[in-house]
Every structure is written in C-alpha cells, then in structure tokens.
Length: 456
Image 1 (tube, rainbow, N blue to C red):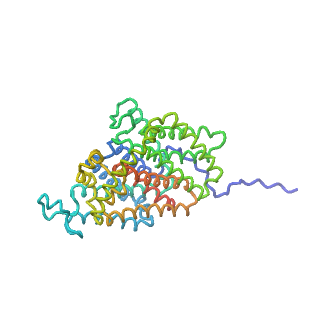
Image 2 (image 1 turned 90 degrees about the horizontal axis):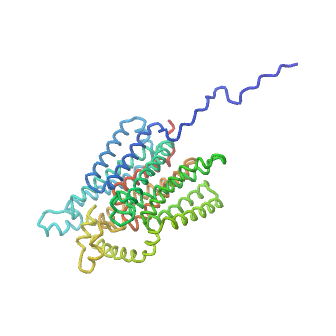
Image 3 (image 1 turned 135 degrees about the vertical axis):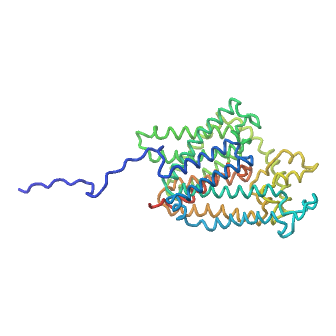
C-alpha cells in the first residue's frame, strides 16, 4: 500500500511570512514630511492665520526649507520628479507671477495708475501699492512650495493616508483648544459669542472646521465599511468623536456659508462615491438620511446661533450685494490688469463716499474671492490662476477614475475642493494665508495621490 504523501503547506515554498501591519499611528517611510507639513499649517493657524506679513513670510520660508529638504533626499526627489501633468499648472502660476511683476512697472497697456501722478511719484506703476503686490508675489511663491511639499507627501499611498489622518487628529486638538477658549472667554472674540480660534473672524474658522469635518466624515465612512461586526463600535468611536468635535466648532462659529458649503461638499463626495462604484445608491440614500438626521439633531441642540443667523440671511445678502456692486464697478474701470495683487483694502478705502460709507467702512475684504481676484489682478492675471486650479482638480479627478485604490480618500479631497470654492463665493477665507496654505497642501496631496503610489 502506498504511503500517503505529506500534505504540502498551502503557502508557496518561496513565499515570505506575512508582514505585520504597522500601527496606524506609526509614521510610514519618509513620514517626517507629513508631520512637518501638519505642524507648519497648525502653527500658522495658531499665529492668527499668518495674517501678519512677518508671520506669513516665516511660513513661506519654512515651506521653502522643507522643499529644500525634500529635493535633497533622493527618494523624495524621485517621487516628485515622477509626477506627470505638472507642467501646465506650473506655466499658469508662472504667468500669474509674471503679470504681477509686470504691474510693478509703468509699462503695462494703459500706463501707470493715475494715483502715482497725484502723489507726485514718477514713473509710477500699474499697481496702486507696490509693497502689497510684492508681498502677494512672495506669498504665491510660498504657496507653490507648500503645494510641492504636499505633492511629495501624497506620492505614496501610505504617506497620503497618514498625512490626512494626522491633519484630522491635530485638528481635534486645535478644535478642543478653540472651543474651550471660546466658551471660557480665554480667546478674545471680535464678534460676540461666535468661535473664531485665532483667525479673528468666525467665518474663517468655519471654513477650517468644515474642511476638517469633511475629511473626518469620509474617514468615518471608510472605517464603517471596513469594520467587522464585532469590532465596529471600537473602530468607529475615535473618528466619530473627531466628527463631533469639528461639528460643534463649526456650529459655534455660526458660519452660514461654511455650513452650506459643507452640505454642497457632501453632495459632491456622495456623487463621486457613486460614480466610482465605492457606494451603492441604496446605501448612499440611507447614509444621507442618517447624516441629515444627525445634522438636524446637532443643530437643534447646539446650533442656536447658526439658526438665528440663518434667519438674518436676507439682510446679509443685501449687504454683500451692495459691496459687490461697488467693487464690480471698480473692476470694470480697470478690467485688464486690475489694481495690483493685495490692493483690495486700499481700493476699498478709495471707493468710500457719503453714499456707501456705512457699507464699506468696516470691511477689509470683498467677501468674494473671485471678485477680489479679478479686481486685483484683472482678467489678464486672474485667468491663469483660475485655470491653474481648474487643471489641478481636473487632473486629480481623471486620476481618481483610473485608480482602483484610494478612491474614497481622493473623493473626500475633491469634496474639500468643492467646499473651499463654494465658500469662496461669499467669504474671504482663501485670502487668509494659513487657509490658502492648507488648501495648497491638500491640492498637492491629491494631485500626487491620483497618480498612484511609487513602485519602489
């Protein structure tokens, strides 16, 4: 009788033992750039959104130093150099900078602005404030550095996921500090009982916490989808607490625009999930109903200020309409090259008259980033900037459709793009340097992540 052969192992003879999965808190390879990026952003948030020029310059210098470190590392440099599609957005940004530099001279079509002749300075310039325009050029270069740092971070899937999670958990600490400071009165607030953190404006705080809530909700959906029945509560509890923290901070800011932008972003996120097949229509509808129910419950419990302000929306829309009409007329008076980057406040002061002093005297921004950009840069300077952003988002969307992994994270980042762009139509959050840097960093992460992880 034949002796039975020994049962072979199911694992191939050449297979290596399965590697243990690293803890979620452990940084991936070259994770220092994610840690440094998050630290830079929240430091800028804490230092009053880097609204002071010296702080903004420090943020830009730190971003440049980080970029130098990335380019000095062979692995990270290769991650950046392998990215495709950067040429067209880079050309657009270069055109914006070149146009801004051109406005520092008197040789633009139409010649220098008449204000220079009025004050007796010749030959003058196209911009009405050379120092403000020079500072904005430096800020744009700083944002370019932040974007490349984000792109290097997102060039590997594990680094991108780690960076987003780190952003969320650092945001939880920031949100708890902001809420406790607001509730106790330890943080000075310019607009009564509305949470501002250190942004000096509750609507800017609303933008930041709406972005964080969108990212946290997407991570919560991912955790719910991947959790086993027995461990679901354990896996969902931490991210649920993060969502609750951001929701309370958002409601305490009482920002109508941020809340509406968040709802628009949620619609974009669900639509992208349906488009890529990550979510079925029935589950999306059920989740939407649960989400709306949870939102209604939270608003009814803690959203008294927000509800009060929603009932005052008509007065606010009238006020904004008056501001926009005055500045739209100013844009039409200089449509090609505008008045120079960074000059919105100066232009606003020059527009004051007896008929509009009550509307314009207390504002420092136009409450519409698109109108502010075309007023400052004109059509010639604003068009390439809008095209640069559109190209980055379009390339990310195309890359998401081609990928088989990380689609949920990419959908959440594209939803954040929608949130920022929607809120930009009624507020000036993107004019705050730290908020602009946060978005530039997330744009870099998503642009690289859409192209897939490095194969090294």
